Image 1 (cartoon, rainbow, N blue to C red):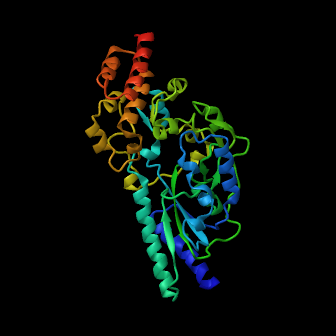
Image 2: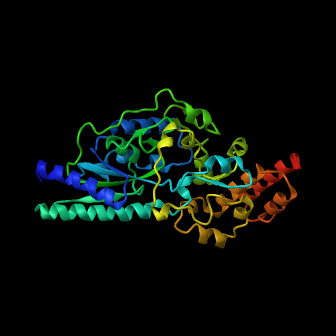
Image 3: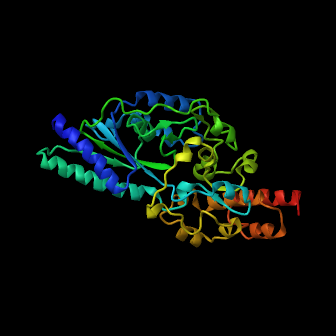
Length: 358
């Protein structure tokens, strides 16, 4: 395919992406070695906690050609998930409520983005066929393969990696999801990258409840509340239970204080709307979910990743940080005996109430 056709295709991909509901699209080459070195240094420092899978695939994460042989470029897309102006600050101050990271309040984004990427892929394939090019090959990725997708997005011009290690876009902040299409078409162009605009700002570093951001661009997963409440399968270390507050699945603090999120755009995507009142629900009601309730209400949700025991563990800690009273203690006692993991955190929560009864 000639340069004129490739230029036309790039323009068409921008047009189709907008029609499909993506907020931005860009094109990256496959040279991710610099980002790969940073990942290796991070792993060597032991900052990945128990997430051994981060080291499992070696250099596959920064060599896209090992994921799809013949890859010459990567189409990177992003889609905003902020459904409305979040009430995060209010929820965090109300210790009777459970705070759930904004991205997890609606349906799991993977299927939504993958379906849109499939439609985009089909349009590209038809374009190639119309141009008598039948050699188009591709692979779709929605956090479904070991790829440094933030690095790809940086090279595609979708933003820069902030001091909190999240991707930030100057017109949309950081409340968005990413997806990719690996292709054998040479679509990447030079000069796509956005400059890093964090400047001297330290807001995310200063606000982190557990000081998980050790310094600019360096996150210690062992301290991160998102890791502790989602990926972590064991007990939450006692020193982090008080700082956890009422955060029961994930943590958005470093996004809430980021100045660039003043420009965060809303999305009307139905799948990203909060379900089951998860943007404003009482801790006690959430804690009393049965396993059947949990399975039913987290179907198609990222929250399922924590598992029922992890869910109760997290809420038990939050209830230990809630206003003291006999009602809360009685609620905690109703889940005693389900597992040693849950019991440990219930006992800790009950101790907090016994220390300062009201």
